Length: 428
Ligand SMILES: Cc1ncc(COP(=O)(O)O)c(CNc2cc3ccccc3n(O)c2=O)c1O
Image (cartoon, rainbow, N blue to C red; front, side, top):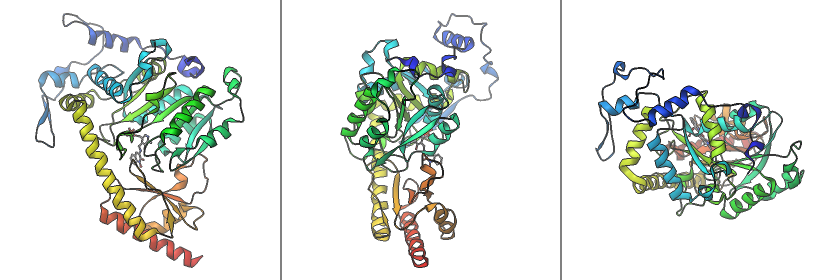
C-alpha cells in the first residue's frame, strides 16, 4: 500500500513532539534513569492517595499509593503500554489480522487507545480528507461521524444500505463514474475513503452479511480504497460466532477498525481504540500528541486492571452477557412493534446493536411529526433526516433505541407513536 496517497497535507506536516517522545523514553527507561527533562508535575502534590472500584462480584480493583501516582500522571500518547499490549492480543485472538505479518512500512497492524472511538474517527477524517475529496459513506449513518467529516469540505457520497448493510451493487454503480486505473492518477477525484458501520448499524441496526463484506473488500482492493470500519457494536452481535471483521480479511493493510468500550463497559470512561496499518496509526498518534496528548491515564489503568483480572475469556463472557441483554430488549421492542405498528410502519429485526429503524407508512418526512407532535404525546425518537448523508433530505424513518427504556416503556412509547400515526392519517 502507498499510504502517502491517503494522507492530506496537514497530516503529512505532522512531526513527533520532542517532549512526548521524551515521555516515552523516560517511561521506558530504567529506574536508575535521572530525568531533568520533562515538565511532569510532582505527584506528591496530588491530593489522591488511593482508589478502589467494586465489581459485581464484590471484588475490588485497587490503585495503591504507588499505582495511583502513575495513574494520575501523564502517559504515552498511544496508550499505557500494558493496555495497548492487551488490546493487540485481543485483536490477534479475535481477528487474526493478516496485517500482523506485514512489515512496519507495509501496513503492519498497530493500535492506539483513543478517548472514545469518536476521537479516533474525527482524527482519522482530519488525517485523510482534503477539501473537495469524494468520500463514500453508508446512507443513512451515524450523525457523530457526519459532524466530524462535513466541516472538512469534502463531498460525501451516500451509498444506500439495507438490512444487510452497505449495498455492493450501489457501491459499484457509484464508482462506475471512474475506472480502477484512476486511483493511479494523482489528479483524479476518484474516492479514496469508504466509511461503514458493519455491525448493528447506527441508525438502521443493520449487520453486513459475510458475502457483502468480502465483495466490498474486493471492490476496495480494485479501487484502492481505505475502509473505515466503525465497529462500536461488534460485541453486540446477538448471534455467535460473530461475523468476520474487515480487519480479519485485510490482506493489503487498507482498513482502520474503530472499537469502543462504550457499549460494553462504560460510555463515560471514554475509551476506544483504533487498529490499523502502522503508517496511519502513527499519524493519528501525532495528531493526538498535538491535541489531547493521551486518553486519561487513570481511566486506562482502571480498565486495564479489570481486563487483566478477567483475562480475554472473562472479558468475552462479559460481552456475551451484554449481548444477550440487548438481544432480549430487541425481542421486547419487536413484540411491541408487532402489536402496535403493524400496518402503520415497516422494519427489520436487528441482529446486533441497540436500534430499530422504523419506516413510517404515509409519512414523507418525520422531522416535524417527531419534534412537535410526538413531543405532545410525550414520546421521543430521532427523526430519520438526522442520519442522512445529504443534509436536509426528508426521511420517512425514525430511529428507536431499545438500550435504556424498560419493556413497559417501549410498549407504551410505540403505542403512543401508533396513536399519533392514526390521528395523522385521519387528518390527511
Ligand atoms: C456508529 C458509532 N460510532 C461511534 C460512536 C461513538 O462512540 P464512542 O466515542 O466510542 O463512545 C457511536 C456512538 N453513538 C451514540 C453516542 C451517543 C452519545 C450520547 C447520546 C446519544 C448517543 N447516540 O444516540 C449515539 O448513537 C456510534 O453509534
